Length: 223
Image (cartoon, rainbow, N blue to C red; front, top):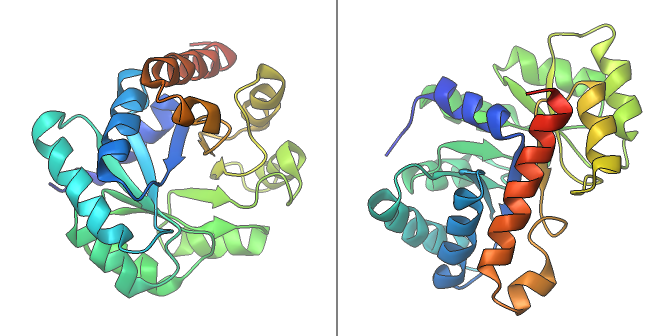
């Protein structure tokens, strides 16, 4: 079910960290996503990276529509408009990509779906803003300059809302410089949903890790 775009954006910013995850088994996806949601991160970015990913995504979104409607499913690794449309039809409430594609922005705007494209320069960020993107993904976060890049952009463009992915982990030494530089959220994959937790099927441990990360971000923000 489609959600209000502004409500989705506010939820992303409020939790501060967007778990980024993909697995070919819908049952594993459900357990991981529920653990993240229980830990306070209800906005989840499912990455479009495996064969038949759209079918897995559909099965997972159908599950949460009934089991836990508070979960907000988004899709990542989107590079073209047809794929964006497919996932929106399958229940995506926000779209994230590694690059900026105006055709994806047009599809998302038509359906009032939040779009966070990957940007690595002030020019790309400005183009994304002209296309109606409220939150831009800084990608790859650690490679484009890290928190210093965010500070540099926020000087002449203080209205910018940035969400780095790549180069961010759960440690305060990593999170604090990013948030103090001015980001509104960060995307986090294997640094949050670790291989060791997945291998052990330790979903309680994952829930605790997510909860601690969300709380640490709140503390850094002074909330």
